[in-house]
Amino acid sequence: MVVPVPTTIEGAREMEVVEVREYREDRDRAAVEEVERECEVGSSGGGSGGGESKMCLFTDLLGDPLCRIRNSPAYLMLVAETATGGGGGNGREIIGLIRGCVKTVVSGGSVQAGKDPIYSKVAYILGLRVSPRYRRKGVGKKLVGRMEEWFRQSGAEYSYMATEQDNEASVRLFTGRCGYSKFRTPSVLVHPVFGHALQPSRNAAIRKLEPREAELLYRWHFAAVEFFPADIDAVLSKELSLGTFLAVPAGTRWESVEAFMDAPPASWAVMSVWNCMDAFRLEVRGAPRLMRAAAVATRLVDRAAPWLKIPSIPNLFAPFGLYFLYGVGGAGPASPRLVRALCRHAHNMARKGGCGVVATEVSACEPVRAGVPHWARLGAEDLWCIKRLADGYNHGPLGDWTKAPPGRSIFVDPREF
Image (cartoon, rainbow, N blue to C red; front, side):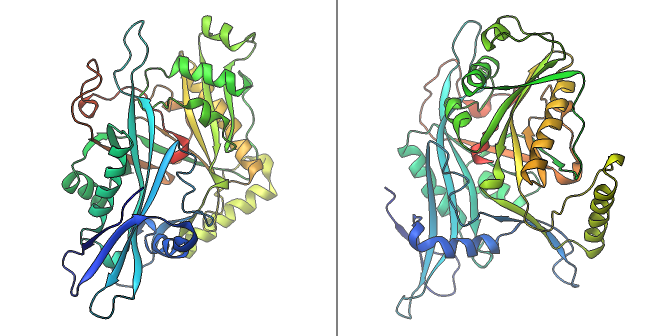
């Protein structure tokens, strides 16, 4: 239970009391959606004057503000609500919100030869929004502070968040005012879904794994990978998880996942697909008319002559869905090529599902990154920041995770993408 805490807004012209409390779905949904609309993300382009249009990425949560956290083991959403004093205090308005979840994951540097992985309980902050009229008044910091109180009550040892590297306001808030430090820099790689299907690779055999097989394979391969969730079985069994796919060289014999792990082929790759389309939709707004027209032209050509295999730009200027590729990994010299075969398979799944793009997020040093096809202009460079919440250190061999060097891979949980 989160107890509401009233405070006053920094620098307000009149007395405005802010209360941070738990989100109430029955009464707060409309107001929260309005704050989300005011905080459209990814703006770019011209300045504040001159009538230049700005492109921004709008997220439609399909009427469910909790959709990005409700699949997590433990989650909470808080809102900041203000009431103006002096006039009876009857006017109340939601001016900010924040989401958070808690889970148990593998910590960096936790695996030694012949030993089990060390897990840490971590918290993740996402969806921090403050109405533009109330920014730089301490509202964001209050929301983060209250969420961290719940994290500590839930036993979390660390808290982390993700933002784009060029989001200076967010980075300044977390690193300058909330005590976080820059930690990891993964990349979001995005590929459009074309109007035509992609030709399957002739050099790879793709097998869909059962959830039990996928769990065994993931625990075997990702045992030392940062942020790998202890409840991977729960992730794989969610309705939004559309399957896990294993790629091996064509002609490789399959007996069982146990036999595969005992004697894996020289190269292999694995990937799972998460259906974000049924959780939220995205939309690019403010695009120039010429850009829209060019995109329409590519789709018309692709539709009229699909045998030409011309890359077409999907309609990203209307609400579109995406499939997220998670658990991307593999081994061997041909693993990037096998990952590319899996990405082609996922593209065709997304095409049948009516999606506009497929996306994944990988570390800068991910060994199979070269095999992930993507359009650079659609992606983003992320920054993850972390903060230690607990006093002392529970895991002697690990020490302070916030100071650990990055590994080659990182596991991005699809439940919070």
